[in-house]
Length: 460
Ligand SMILES: [Fe+2]
Image (cartoon, rainbow, N blue to C red):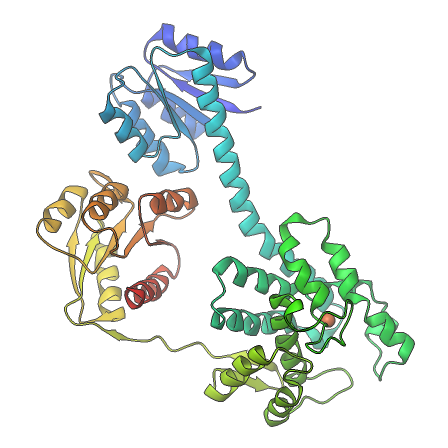
């Protein structure tokens, strides 16, 4: 049952709101002030807050802000008698999940609450899915690798190469992630292959080979009930198909083989050839290059083989007996004369660190800093910016307000939002307000910021 906290200073209205919500089965607690509500929020878990706007002490808008600073994912529905455009726009800017105007019908309040709860649940599911899928994939991959010591780290290494190839093919980020999951899971079906065959220290006979070749289908079936990993199934099923149509299990050929499976097929083979295996010596880099050239357009997609050969040639892809290894790409230093950057950040220490990072990432850039929404407006008066970096929480308001103002002036300028930890919802909101990208202030975020601003400036 969803728990709802209701705040209104007027007893009659508070009791009415409680009654309306209880009548449709919510578990409702009430408070007569925002201060009392904040204390209750510390003590217990709630799924949603319904608050009056005009109250003595903290107003509903101030309560909304305090709630969002503590738990950004907790939806707040405001009940307002004011009904003015100002309250409405302020409430939405500050992230209200819904707005009900007094006087209201019972159904107005009930549907505003139901909608807000549904939206919150959906964004929670999205988040869970994004966090859970990689964890689940790694756990399954570990289960395969645990049976065979030679395979240790194999999936992670080939996944790194597969991801790099997917990036070089300019696949959208969600497809790159699917390739990564598929690469990690490609051999998950080997769970169904008996040890006497899988771990046999000598070459396999025909019967044994036939058994091993069932692993893509077993893997595909294994993942069938897992919606979270559905995107990886075509990769798992088809990673042993061959470009010339002589592979298994479905004898698909050329473009008929899913792209992710074609990528993983090459990455898997390169990783297997370069690492030490049970009954076979690793091949030298020269032998691997020869094999890639030889089987280009027969076993493998020629375009993907060419990309991998390019990575070997440039030195980015290193092949050793420990398996393949991708070198970190050296950060590119962008020299951009006269680039003007607006930094809006109230914390002095953070501002100093971020300024250093921006100046290092974008050599020649001049960073101007404001510490508040008002300060940003003042600085921006008559200035144009090449880039803006805006903190979410400012002493006199929210970064969203700065975003709105900057976007009104310049619809295309790159803007990066800095948000606190665990505030995915804030990030979504930032995009809604026109942010180009966001960086969560957590360990290592300065490096992330450097690479994002470089990317944005290059793209611009
Ligand atoms: Fe396989």
